[in-house]
Length: 283
Image (cartoon, rainbow, N blue to C red):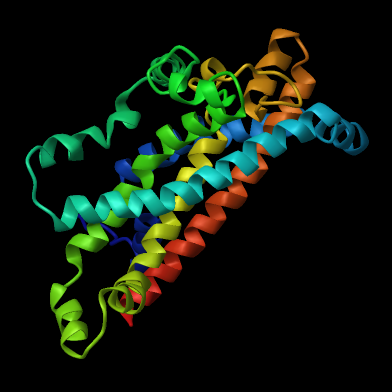
């Protein structure tokens, strides 16, 4: 009689432990190819310049000006969209009106519209001869091909992030809480600040952070609607492109690395805001 030795339980469990599903393997491979390897290559290329040279290129006057235009303008536009994005989300959730589905679909237009087309459209509308730009021209305000144009482009491409982040939270909010506050004598303003706004704040902050990070990395629309003049309205991503046009790959890599580090810091902040929002919802 032929007998086979059974595989020990320890060996079997160890073998199963290292047999990962094919979905897991594909996911890891895709993340490595699309994210980890390019980021590692960028950091490796930037680190080869040396700490002193890296600092000199990253802190040169034109780069510091580009950082200031990029980050300050993106922060201001993110805060503005935080206010108006919340207002638009409130109207889309709480009110019924003709064409509501159309306006709700239009919100996603910046996601689908190519950024170059968006920049061309905005430059046409906000130029001195455009529909909106001509209204400001008599007052000496030039929107297109100035820093105002950069702000308009950033407002356009980052607005949907706030709306789409706040909308689900507003949809799930019970209106009975507001009615209870009114029955206890609270005014509409008090109800908003003390009952409605606190649960919305995590979603609003997350949308603002997402819009800010999106505006920081914008290129296609800004390069068309701004004049791309150094120390005026030149943003960091356009500066990287100009460095590449001049075959200064080292400067482009260093400035790109600075943008990458800032983006990672923003991503970390977004994760903190989302964790805070989850803890708030569980209370």
